[in-house]
Amino acid sequence: MSRAFRLGLAWLRTSRQSVSIYCVGAIAGVTVYYLYNDQRIASRRQQLIKRRKELQLDTTKSHEQYRFSSLNIGGRFVNPFDTWRDKTLWDFVRWLCTRTSGNGLPKDMDELDRTLPVVTPHFALLNALSRSANVRPHGGAGDSVEYAEYPDPSELDPRSTVTATWLGQSTCFVQMDGLNILTDPIFKRRTVFSWLGPERLRPVPCQLEDLPRPDIVLVSHNHFDHLDSDVVRQLGNTVTWYVPLGLRGWFARRGIYKVKELDWWQESEYTDADTGRNFRIISTPAQHWSGRNGLDSNSSLWTGFLVKGANSSVFHCGDTGYCPAFKEIGAKYGPVSLAILPIGSYEPRWYMCHQHIDPDDAVRIHQDVQARNSIGVHWGTFMMSDEHYLAPPRDLATACAKYGVLDGLFVAPQFGKTRLYFS
Image 1 (tube, rainbow, N blue to C red):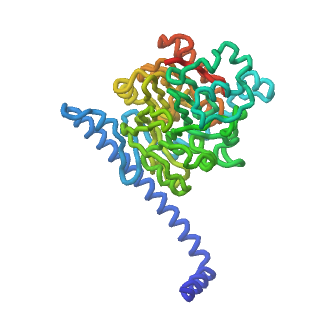
Image 2 (cartoon, one colour):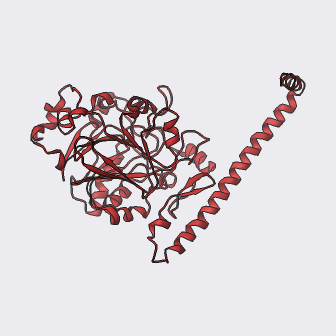
Image 3 (cartoon, one colour):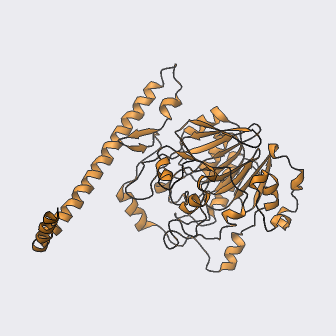
């Protein structure tokens, strides 16, 4: 082995020009292989979509089993929807060359404080609706002016109360029927590392340790702005993680084994050890993609989650483009007490429409899943698209008026403000 190594070094010293030629050839070969493989997968995807439509004619089968079940080709998940189109390298380059800059962000921080205020969560309320084992000391933010009209937390029944506290991007702390839920957690200042990735426009309203302890965590997909590895290490096996198909191994490599991996339409039951209450956690279809580096693209699935308790239900959509699966979700599981729907990262539409809904699409999903109330998330946190930073709530108001959604039923919440609903 050592002799072969020495011979290899000698060859490299005498053949530097050849080495550079071989490297260029290797890179070109790998590029051609990936382009060919992408084309092969795209062709196969279309064939399978067509086949699934034909199978719908078989009335003995439930059609979502075919048309809206997940699809894996050659070890990679793909979208089984006609509404999806794969992006090419040229699409990405075109977007970079034509995108606008700034997003209308003010240079004056006072202006940003006024337009995107950060509110302290109602910790007294959150603790009052949590099991005693989950309660944490808080700084007493429940007496602020934002919560002056809220009822006394001690008078509320956890079995008929739903709270939702938006912490930025798609991270929400939700309570329903006494269950504490954390969605797509990220508390970092930047998406990837402390020095890499888009930076938060506004500070996170609170830290993870300030909140009551979550019982379960819902992870819709593995993008950095939806799955913070620091939070995974911090919570570890103290919670139950619900993740899409193919993501359990990522957690196992970090010593996390309390993980439920679900395929679309698959269900898992969670039982509260203290109260004995049962909850159904259901994985639902979405139109998106996954990956944390260039080597693991679509090696794991992407999903939404529906949590159903005895008295209420919460739908966490995750990232998605609009697709016909949402009508099926509503028909199968609606009505929904509260839907958490993305309303940002949608411009330019020619590039973003297949992977991110806009507020108009979000209102359609609100109606498709038969949501009584919805909150709009995934905006104003990390600017990764071209729309004005205040466009999502404005466009949401326009869409609600267009589709006849009454005021207050679908809102773009303030950062950190705890919203209260009754089932």
